[in-house]
Length: 209
Image: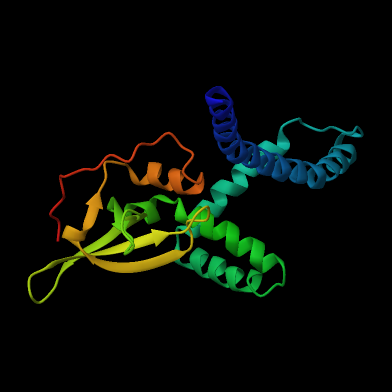
């Protein structure tokens, strides 16, 4: 029985590890293949017109994908580029069906971006009023009340989609600080708690206000 549970848990863990890898590989492959389908006839026509023979260089799709990705990054790093991307974003969000897919993917990517995870300072457990049950959350900001009491803003994400959740304000003394990185905590949430991360209580609390 124990062996059966171990095999099942290991198999499910493997699935959660493989799904994002396979999905990422498939998306990149799909993009590169789509570029090849569009570019290949164009290159053949140009080379045939110039040399009289149809020539196609393997790997052109990968090269173009890298160039487009780099140029997009350059575009997003200047004022006019940001304006173009902003208005393009508004247009996409007005297209039925496409809007839902685009927004969902963008929210997930934004959640795992370095800028977003840096705003999560510490991982904590918040006890549910019923007692003996806890929410996993992230301290986003520390403040002091007029009475001098230490107060923390804590974001409680939902599972398996951490892009949604709710915000609470709790006294620092009411929070249980655990020794876990923000990245590991996010993986724990997305995997429905199936990762091997341990919830180790940490008595050391940073005093940054």
